[in-house]
Amino acid sequence: MKIQGKTYIQHGGKWLLLTAMAVSLIACGKNKPAQQAMPAVPVGVIQVATADIPVTFEYTAQAEGSREIDVRARVGGILLKRTYEEGKPVKQGDLLFQIDPEPLKAALDQAKGNLQIQQAQLVQAKQNHERILPLFKENAVSQQDRDNAVAAYEAAKATVTAAQAQVQQASLNLGYARVTAPIGGLSSKASQSEGSLISTAGDAGLLTKIAQLDPIYINFNLSDQDMRRLRNMQDSGQLKMAGNGQFEAKLILSDGSQYDKIGRLNFTDNLIDTNTGTIRSRATFANPDGIILPGQFLRISLQGAKRANAIAIPQRAVLTNQQGKIVWVVGADNKVQPRPITVSQEVGHDVLVETGLKSGDKVVIDNIIKLQPGAPVKPHPFQAGASAPAAAQPAKG
Image (cartoon, rainbow, N blue to C red):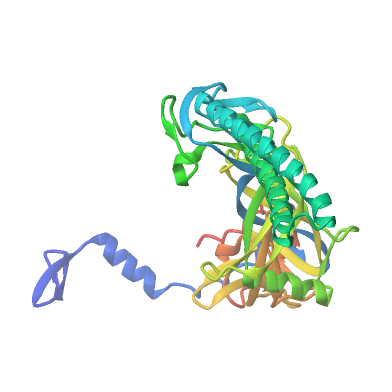
């Protein structure tokens, strides 16, 4: 209704003033022309083709010395001094610790004295043996006397042999008072301080550790599923190995840089770890400068394999919804439709497509957010780094 030239409308039992702009919009709405059809959206596309695509497999890994030795005391005693610098390289045979040798020297002297006693008794037994035998032949002594002389002589020889072994053991123990490096490598912190009483039992005998860093071992685990998949792909011909049939191993350091040495696999276990369900594997790398340290976490990349007749598309073309992965595919009528796909591993900025695409399909790479099922598009070859042409704007009414 109009009151004094103003228009009012009723809403919820109340009369509201309708402004001139609203009236104008209502009037325009009555004469609105039919909505114009949306123009074709320009999109960059690639044509799918199969090829042999290099693939890599990355795993978390941990470094380990190729030889890691516990340096232990072989005799007990007071630890007099440590002669190496902790954490520094040592050479095989270098003196590391000195255990008090005096008690061991006394034990050696005692063993030597016992040996001399046994040797004297051997001389006496031998002389008695040599006297009895001629008398026995002349029936001057009994059979028992002869047997006793022979037994005493043999027992004396055995006793001397045992005494000689005791001397040798005491001499070895004296040498063990000097604890030397069994291998060359990087030393660790000393486990016992100077003045400690060292024994050969348990942790009390552990003095330090030495790790050989060159070469260095890199340990990593493959899941049972990954191992089975790799073997199945090799058996079926989907995965082609390099000429020597071995992976080429490369290391990625914690800062993201790549280690400059190339390694090789030298061990894969034939048992599955029941605690983790994984298979232990190992690669070896040259480490002349000691850049890689035992216990260091890294990533190992296994390279040199190719997926035969595989399809790879840019990751930016793949969308994810509740049903899984999809891509937009351009049909012969230049209209797009979503296509569900399954993917496996990433290859650089691309991803391998296992199912859903075939050679010759045209996949949309850019302007994806503007697409709807059945929408017309204007495809052009996709060029990485080039921006897509702007979509034509609808004419203004």
